[in-house]
Length: 409
Image (cartoon, rainbow, N blue to C red; front, side):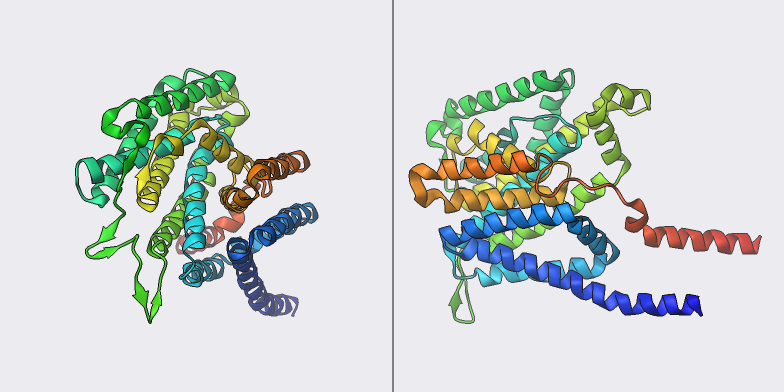
């Protein structure tokens, strides 16, 4: 009787938990939408409320509970999240400026996910994410403008060149650690900015304009279309593409996080000597973090070139790298979801405080410093890996197979 009662209680609990997952996704979607579409002051108030809410929820343990709930109901969480993601560009269909901010937030989130592999997982402070982003952007610009080839070839070339850059830069920097690694990447960022300024083929200080966006036949991802009599903002098709790529990147980042590779990266971050004694190939793992981070940054840069239709030295400066670092720290290092949250919040803050002119940087700095003092681990800190919940289905299937094999024997 007790077993049957427990089973009935679980069956009654499942629909309620599914509804909670759907409601949580809808609430998060509504917050993002109003944060983007509201006026400057209202957006800043919403951002402040979100930051305070996240801190209080994490203090009470609700964030951990919500993560566990989403893991238990992965399919419902994924489907409802995808529906919300699809709905966001549709609601911003006629808002040209807001759609542009949304695209920028998504692209910055891609770059921050790449940086998180190095800073968050492996504790390698990289001051040159903007340089790797610039490699992808300039590759896209050179191939589509200077060489006149297909944007898709330029996009794939951006991935390849970013990977090669990660290998070439990662190999010599493996010999450095701590502050020395930071200084090397800082020098790399400054050298990259000066290099693109002084190469005429790359446009010099004037940059390269007329960068083409991706297209499928006659369908261009940066073009204004009229659907059911409504003229869409030109960024809407590209926003759909960027959101799809971001979802794929988050999935890859989360799979790496729970894999043996993610564990080995964390081992290196905690104690490289101990990791080496335990059999971890530290050089290979650190190179992996550099390469996959470079690829993510390069993809973000290629999409940025298609969005802005222009790339120049001022887009990939040391100041931009510092902003990416702040996004990762604010959201929560070694947590893909927290990284995306930090990128979204700081991108919206940067855009919304532009009208405050002289006070914009002060508002931005006060918010960042306050959060870092109150919560050094970030708004959404990294979580303890729960392999039992993540791979519960696989464990049950393997257990049933073992039982069946034992019975046959």
